[in-house]
Image (cartoon, rainbow, N blue to C red; front, side, top):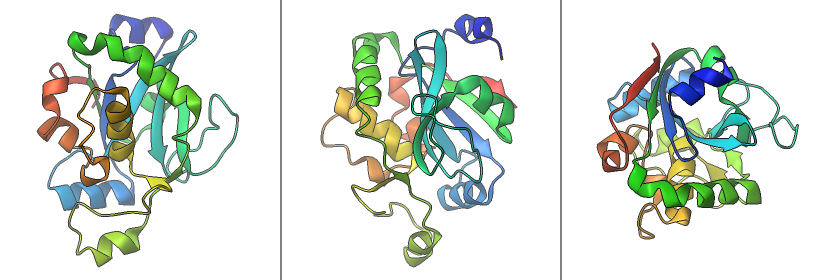
Length: 190
């Protein structure tokens, strides 16, 4: 994907991508939720680059963080072109509706604070202990699940109500429960 491609798709800070991956955790997430969606990430512009701020396991996708240069588990900002080109699965774009344009700079500032740089939650044991049912209380305050990160940023920016508990939602819930925030999904890969 070239820089001109993402500009022609009108991707902006605050848009979200959702995916249907092929990794083991993706299959498990799809099975538990009964959907074909297993991952999500918040898209944002930094200087002239389009990045995705997401929580992921590094054995599935291992670029260094674009801002810090560090490798490791957890919340990372990586070039979306790299993510799009290396993601094994389908990817859809959810454009945040224009009525939320005033919140886009707030999202960028929240990401840049670094306060969301927690570990990625990959606890299969917690999922099994919960009987493979959602929601699952992961290590609150220390880890993020991908959709939890997106909704935490949306909540902290004021896009969704402060009473929303992001840990209760999965990637498909971005469509099922919060679909009113977005324009119709656009297929980017698949």
